[in-house]
Amino acid sequence: AGKRAVFCEKPLGTTVAEAEEAVEACRRAGVPLIVGTNHYFDPAWGRAKHHLTVSGGPVVSISVTLALAPNARYHELVTELPASAAAGRGAPDLTRAAVAAGVVRQLLTGLAIHDMPLVRDLVPRFERVVFARALPPLGYAVGFVAGGVPVQLTTVMLPEGADTLWRIAVATASDRLDVSFPPPFVHAGGARVRVRAADGRDTIYAHDPVDGYVAEWRALAELLDAGLPVEYDELLDDARYALRLADAAAELIGAAA
Image (cartoon, helix red, strand yellow):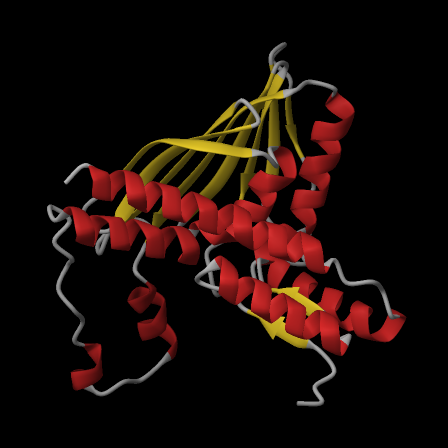
């Protein structure tokens, strides 16, 4: 279509075939492609990766924890909608295995997808899902193994719950690193990075005023202005990793019927 660049929200595709088609179209046209995984572009993640690289301790476990208020809470603060538009759908029947499997797959490709490039950065070889279940009223608990490292993903959305908690915790042989991201939709600066060492040292990194939303658009501008190479294969491997996880988790839940 003659476009100079493509910015795609995550996921890149809901199936591997869709993701491959999108990447190959951009590759053939020579068009820069950015996928909007804003957590990956957050400057705080670069600092966290640097610490993990220089600390020398192997990663022994990863957990990603989300406690989210429904999006409507934020929408109501910044929009004026007619009363009819505010009516929502009822909660899904998670006692039905097929429904639960579909909900978990959708949440993994819609929410967990934010952090899958980060997880793949640390443990790139996905192996198997160990457990998967839907959490009421809307959420999931999923555990999998990648490169011999256990990874746990937990998310719950509570209508009257607290404001967002969004944290990735990485344990190594010598410390624990926490990266706490700001709530979605806001420009509140980058994530907060904290390291607790086994010897009692507690390090809090300086907070960066630039958030992942800004950084991802700057990255797209740099691809255009500097003619930097596009990592098409990396983007595709990120999508394959997340979709393989989502499919395996949904299959495990469906098999329990």
